[in-house]
Length: 592
Image (cartoon, rainbow, N blue to C red; front, side, top):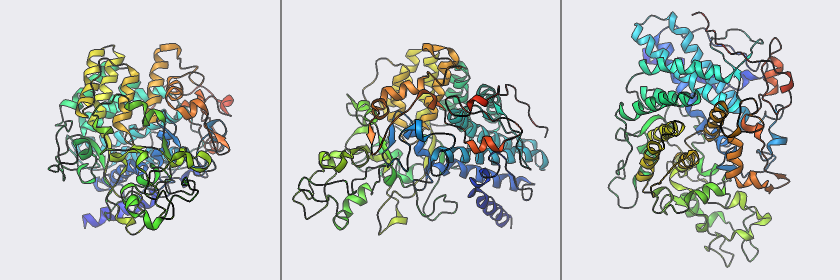
């Protein structure tokens, strides 16, 4: 009976989750939460299940659903290869407060994060009303604070100053005011310190354990320039919870002579396996299992992150179409049928791998070189010969021809697409992994000018990958290693913006907080590494363009307009910022 009750509650909340963007329509930051069903521990735990589901939503589904892509498209590592009528190319003209709506994942990030805030606040504000031991209440509250901090980490690094909502809103709110990013960061340092004291030491896959709290707290400490504390929390995460970098073969293929430990880490069955000691926070998405966020799509990784090699633009030197579906089955089964939504930059494809030696992340097993794509049209004399990019019409090699990390993108579990074009099916995934914790600690050491310690942590990751060891490291080398190690795991844009904020707050290299929209490390890094934005390369009728103020994305105009009893600030550089007022600098918690 208890199980059926929780199942009913979960179904009710999931129904609400599917319309998480709808609440933005009439009152963009004003939403209701249900009164019934959240009156005891079972009700709270049901909402936490929905919160955990919210964590994984961005990693799965088709190009409209899988919003994680935008973190790469607007970074140093990639751009969108799809046509400009669908995707962002020229941020000056396309990324505006009024054009942000529709299919753009920037708007969906805004909506999705506020959904996460809603569920976390429901947990936090209902806990005082339930009957349970203080220990149980603290454990539930700790996870509620984790989820709230997780989504505000994304919001402040995507949108800057935003309203800090801490109460369960039970009627429309049109009087919200932006809170400064600094005040938000300090607040969640305190709440995460509470969380790491009360989260459980261990938790099932998808649930939040204490190590996950330490990992997120490290990111907050870094942003607050509490570098000594960041070293301590990262060290606790590395040493105190039984986690280890996986350096030896493991999992379902441990005894084969073909693969390696890097490949093992991302084999579908291995990600949440008990013998995998590297995963800190993982999410589960398995074919046919209850709670799949995209039951008709799966991960779609082989569709979104691989080139459109089967497209009509791919022509043979003798003037024929290069693709024949009937003769492309084998190639499609192993490579998918990509549409080039996320197109890696030259930095990620080539520059990172210069002098990489025997780095397992770039060997022939784990990295697919575009030169291996072949024509599948038997009518052409070039049938089964390598695609020649110079014959792709319109020179659309942007979308149709590039290399990619096979071990991260290929998903063998594609049951939903059997008999059809494979897209990349169902797989569990990492939200936090211990390799990132080492790189976060390396960054904390860098800010402390403890470069030998930073070097040791980065080389720990490189040694496991069998890459040549660095002799010295700086911030660029740390972020290069993040790019090699954490592709499709880290929210790349957020991490770059986090560092831009730290540098501006410290006044380093001419960066300042008051001029961040004019000069910042995020923009300088993107221009230095992303050849498309740097050279304003043309694609179709548009060009790839980015400006310093794109360090933050625009607040959707409808959110600002609906809030007519107060002011939600617009980010500087966008139309409407002239109406800003000083953000709130102190946090007042609601009475519970």
